[in-house]
View (cartoon, chains in turn purple, orange):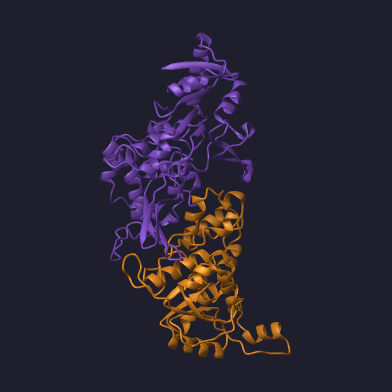
Length: 349
Length: 269
C-alpha cells in the first residue's frame, strides 16, 4: 500500500484536474429545524460547493449506481418490424469526491450481489466500472454504528482515501489511476510526524463513537427470537412507507414493469426499486400476500440484513450508517430493534 | 401500427368510443387531459372521443368508456350519472371529487345544510344536498385519484384499458416516491405533510415543491393513522392541522369517522 501527504490547498488543484469528469460529492442542502445542516451527494460544478466536512447525507450514493427508476430496454415498432434498445445509462466517468468508509463498504456489498454473481447486472456494473472514488475520513455522529458492523474502516473499493491531518491530507492510494493523478500535484512521502498524526487522528475519531449494536451471535439470536413479541410492537409503529429502503445504501430489491407508449408504437421495461416494508412486496400472482402485516414485513427486513445476507456472504448487509433510523418518522432505529430482540435495555439514544 | 389492427403480439387493438362528463367540479381534471399538447394527438388516435363538452361541440350517447369528473350534489346529477352508467361498459371516476366527493364534500361537515345554502347563495337558493362520490349511487369500475389527476398517469391508465392490461395504482404512501427523489423530508423543515398515510402515484408533486401533502389521493392501502398522529405530536404540529387536511378531499372520510367514533366512545367512558 502506498501513502502520500499533500498540503490542503492542493485539494482544489486535485479537484480541478478531476473536474473534466462528472464530479459527485457531498454538498449542503440548507438548514433543518434546530440548526442542523443537511447534506446530500450531488453533481458539483464548483469546488466551493464541495463540503468534505459533511456530517452525513440524508440519502446515500445509491441513486448513482441504482437509480430509483431505470429503463432497462425499450422497443419500437416500425414498418412491420421492431427494434430493441438497451442503454446502460452511463456516458462519462464519475468521480465520487468525498465518500465515508460506510458508503464505500456499502458499494462493496452491493457488488457481491449485483456484479459478482453468475448473472451480473450490467446496468449496475456498468456504472460501478466507471467510478473513481475518493474516500474521506469522518466524524462519527451519535447515530453511527458502523464500528459494530465492522464497516468503520474500508480495505478496498476506492482509488484514494484522505485523512484530514489539520494542515494536510494523508492519502492512502489503492489504484494506479490515483497514483498517476497524484503525480500532477506536489505530494510527499509521509514522515514520522505524519505517521504519528495519522494514528492520533484515527484514535481520536474512534473515541467519538457513541452508538453500538451488539452483533455477537446475532444470526442465532434472530433465529431463536423469530416469534418474539417485539416484532409485533415494532410492526405497530412502522408506517410501511419505504423510506428506510430508499435512504439505505444497500437495499437493492426491485420490481420490473412494462409500459406501452401512448401511440402504441413502442414499449419499455422499467425497473423500480422497491421496499420490503411496502404492503404488496410479497404479493404474488393470484393475489396471495405472504406478508400482509407490517410486523412480518419489518421482521424480514431485519432478517435479510442481519441473517440471510450473513449466511450467504458471511457478512451483514447493514453498514451501520444509521440513515434509516434518522429518516424514519416513526423513529425505528436498528440499534433499538436489535437491542429489543436481544432483550437488552435500549441503551442508545 | 394501423388503428383497429393488431398489436405486435397479435392482440386486436380496438379504438374505444370514449366520453367525458362532469358533475359538481371545477373541470380541472378534464383540463389536465387537454393540457398535454405534446401527447394530445396520440391520445386522440388511441381513443375516439365522442363526448367532451369542455373540448368539442359534438355530443353522442354511444360510448364504451365514460370518464366522470365531479361529485353528486343534486338529484338531476344522480339521474344523469345513472343514465351514464347504463350506457357505459366501463365507468371511470376521474379525480378526487368523483372518487371521494373532493373539496366539495367539505360542506358535509356542517350539520345544518340549509344554513350552508343560505350562507353561500343568500336569497337565491339552488337545489343542493349532501355531497357524495359516484360510488354512492352506481358501480364504479375504475378510480383515478388526484386533485387534479396527473395527466401522465391518466394516459398510462387509458393505454392499459385499451390494451386490456390491468390497471394498478401504487398501494404505498407518497413517502416512497418523495424519498426516491432525494427530497428533504418536510417534517425536518417543520412542515406538516400527509405523505406517510396518503396513496402515492402523484410522483410527490406537492412535496417536491416544498408543499406538504394534503391527502388528495386518499389513504394508502396501509395507512398507519395511530403512528402518524404520534409523528404529528412529536413534531409539535397541532392535531387540527392534520385533521383539516384529512378532511379536505374526502378520501379519509371513513378513517375520520372511525377516529371520531372512538373519541366519542372514550368521552362517554
